[in-house]
Image (cartoon, rainbow, N blue to C red):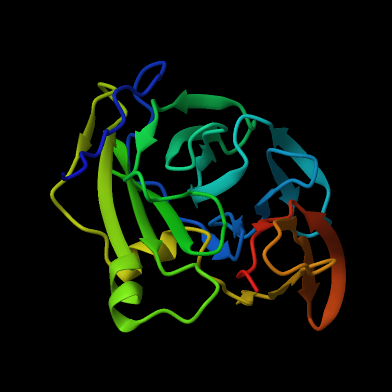
Length: 250
């Protein structure tokens, strides 16, 4: 039986937000830099999303409504959060880039039953969002591969491999959300945090992720450190939110 994608049903907004296409930001792994290269947005260690002054590392604001980034413009920060009970469900939020205030939240987006937004062995997920006229486009891709312990036969491996993707358009003037017929391309995800630019103008970025206490087959939390440099000198560093990690079974 084929699954059916449940698209975002409503977008809670106080009037139209986008009068023109905002400029997109720059992805730096899990973090994103503002288009004017003055602020960096990142998942905070204590939870939520935080805005940091790029030159000093000073915290400008923190938003606790979502935990991961989907895209950044000169006016908005698009974030997302998974569902605590269902791994294949997530929703998207719009945050004011200047104040950190949440100005829009979607109803859940439901992926196929086999999909997972969580970082776990055997499942992949990526998301990106960019402004589009008076709204935004949200791109997602979910994947699955064989996650057993023993080496599978080609037939078992092929049966376990799955891929599905979609593009949802949100109209900020009316609040209407439409699942488009388009499929995301690889370049569409360049707007999201999956890409990594190690240098933007005079700034250089290093993102280190460590897996403490490796235990095969057991879930754990990684340690993520962001280092910002300029002219070859470290300006500041900060520990960000770690990622859940499920290594392959023994």
